[in-house]
Amino acid sequence: MTLSLVDFHCHLDLFPDMESAIRETDAAGIYTLAVTTTPKAWPRNNELARGTRHVRAALGLHPQLVGERFNEISLWDEYLPNTRYIGEVGLDAGPQFYKSFDLQQRIFVHILQACARAGGKILSVHSIRSAKTVLDLVEQHFPLGRGRVVLHWFSGTKSDARRAADLGCYFSVNDAMLQSDRGRALVLGLPGDRILTETDAPFTRINGRPTVPGDVAATVTALSTLRKIDAVAMAETIRVNLRALLVSAEC
Ligand code: MN
Image (tube, rainbow, N blue to C red; front, side, top):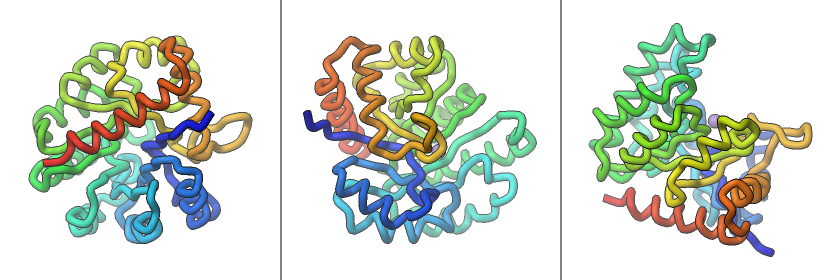
């Protein structure tokens, strides 16, 4: 069985050898979004991804880094016209990062407004303990039709998820989300045409080691069991969803 796989959020530049990670992921035929945590990392990611068929690099400013690196937003602005993919961006209201939460919101609003003006961007968005605020800001500053949001490792409530779907958001689901009853219930409730897969590699672990993009295969299997769909059909649905996302973000 050959599954065409999608890893819509991973950090290939945090692998010990980024160059071979990108090469191997491309050779494996996995449609992969290589997110970055700082705009300084984007040119090298983009240079390596540009020549591949399956890997794309996203321009990020991670909310956990905003407290120290907010001034890199000018570099983010400079690179924005050169990429369709944005991430990792968003908000993190966890105890470690709460002190920068106001600043994170200002940066995220700036990013949403810039992407709305530019049009056609696809954003991979972090929303730890801040789903409601993220959705409020998306609703206010990033109209549907100006681009698309993919909520990465979403952990809001079921009603947050419904609201996100109404705002046109997609969800990239990883294996860690399927390890709890609450996570499984949330994922089961997502609209089938908005689901993508991700690893967030190397930040998640499987069998005691950091994940790699190929580990989305296990997530597809777990999703197919949860949603009572054949695994091949589940993988195909995810590919169809990715294609629909790319088309719908065009404007
Ligand atoms: Mn991440």
